[in-house]
Amino acid sequence: KKAKNNDNGSVHWRTMSNTASLRARGPAFDADTNGGVNGSKRSRVRRKLKSFRKQSSLKIKNVVVVILITTGSIFVIGTMIAMWNFPRHNDNVLLDAASLRAKYLQNVPTIRDTTDPLLDEDEQRILNAAHDELNRFPISIGIDDMQHENPDWETILHPGTEALKMIHGESHQQKAKKQTTPAELARVLSGNNLIQSNANTNSDNSDKSGANEGYMRVPKFWDPPVYGVIADERERRGEKLSEGDGVRRYLGNFGSRLMTPSEAKSIGSRIPSKDDGELLETIFIAIASYRDWQCSGTVESAFLRAAHPERIRVGVVDQIHFETDEPCSKPPNGSCEENPNQPLCLYKDQIDILSLDAALSVGPVFARHLGYRLYRGEYFAVQCDAHVEFVQHWDDEIIAQWHTAKNEMAVLTAYVSGVENHIDVKTGKRTSKARPIMCESDFEGSGKMKHLRHGQQPEGIPYIHDMPTIEPFWAAGFSFGRGHFIINVPYDQHLPWIFQGEEISIGLVMIT
Image (tube, rainbow, N blue to C red):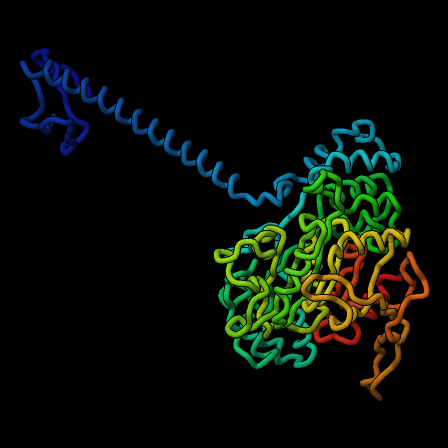
């Protein structure tokens, strides 16, 4: 720093403090040594200081540039990795409501700023904008990891927790405040310890999963954003709608009115046949299995006997004891490495299995509820037990039978016949033409335990041909109808330990 002139007119340099030292790449020098720098050394020191300042400035600039480049590179690479790893089945999750509206209404600019009621042709044009999204197949439920980062999954309260609060009252509520884990809940429900294996499962509902107070992770119900956009547009134009997911508001506003034919028609994906490119209606099969060793054989039968296995997608709720039971995901004829041509190996991308420790099972209603959560927009929906043999070309045949009903709301259902004397298990060919029909129902038991139970008449050759026979009851063991059946008639999440009332409750919701 420049100092004032001395008496002799010479200019001295002084440091900013007596302890300051300047260090360059060479030997250190102290600008305050021996009272400062003067005389013949002044020019040399000036040059060194000027060179040092220049070098220091360049170093700082280089460091700043390197930091900026490194930070920018990390940000770009991180963004690319995040985009690459982002779930492909959830392409619209980053779009807010305004962006979604703009996305789907860009093809119908004439209606964007009006308040006139939407016409069917307007809604169809909006749906056409989502054609590829609504016809993707298969769509998996994805995998939920320990961090629960999958946006297509959610946390729900296990229905057993609710029931225990009702049964045990305050004592259980006090326990719940201490964050009851799924393991503790399982012990209360069954007396068994919960042992969770994460192999062959889409989620981790173990005691180490971070869940507490009897909560569990499950897939969300299918709800493409385009239906919410249409429902919001209807509401903006004066229609009163309930709160909730978009697709059920779109399809009759949670049952407050019947679906229109155009609304019903909008549900269901189609894919080209691998044989001739003809469009095929897709089929979803929901299977609830409780420790059933025949489960994998049922899944194999569905694909093996189908005329077009490429259009089949299966969702299994597999309730097992992980230490002792064979999982439904295990191929029946050796591993996929040993025998890769098994249906469970060939069509693994069309199979989703939600595994649950059997100790957490609370009856068929909740298991079927979880199964309906696996639906992903298929055209037809099947519900069946985990011990079923399918006949040869069952998919073509049952779709043809459904079409003969000439009714969008038709559901084909029955207590299926036994395998013996009805099917050749080796070829899958039918060996009888008898048909069961559900026309019997009666009360059984006594007192408070008296309850209604469905039955069926003895099988026989049907008198009505070329069309299904109308019957008054619905069977949970086998049901076939349009995909919007699952959307409009979902199983109740809050009915643990219900068996006899399962079919009656669904039948009542169907009809009303």
